[in-house]
Length: 230
Image 1 (cartoon, rainbow, N blue to C red):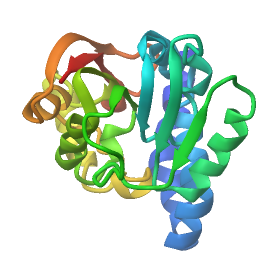
Image 2: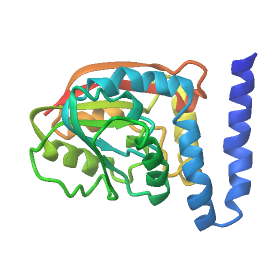
Image 3: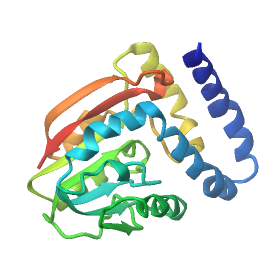
Image 4: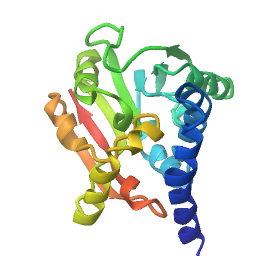
């Protein structure tokens, strides 16, 4: 019953309340609604459980793509990580992340920039982490080429994303909603082919698992997580 209620209220929120809020104006919506929406949707228990599988694996000098509101910061292993450079273009999300950074024992640097143009040196990082962010990057192909560029040879890309479903009806819903859902959700595209995007960049998949996140809204809930290497 709780799962059904959660799904019902989520659909109402996504397709009724958010469009109404957007009528207040694009700038207001993107500055005041989207950051809170991302912090909420990306911070649900199933999402956080998936983060715990991936983030602690990062070692050495780390770049996190789409650090957003800092939901991963609590999961880094401070004994294995030298520093974390968080890439995100949103001032509002960076402000939320800064507050979380104050509560963890990590060397963290925030870099207010785009994933498609990372101002960091070639072949200089041991790990890149990206969780629930590839969906909202305007040009994911370019972002992944940048990830490949900054990783050291043998460096690891740790990913956890939602993307295209293998089920016909869910996939159709993903394509139908892709016409308007990104404008409501900070650019989120639920129908991206995550594995194809990663391998097309030259990165090599070492581990990959998939499933629908428990209790999730199905068209947003097909999860890919794993490790790729340069």
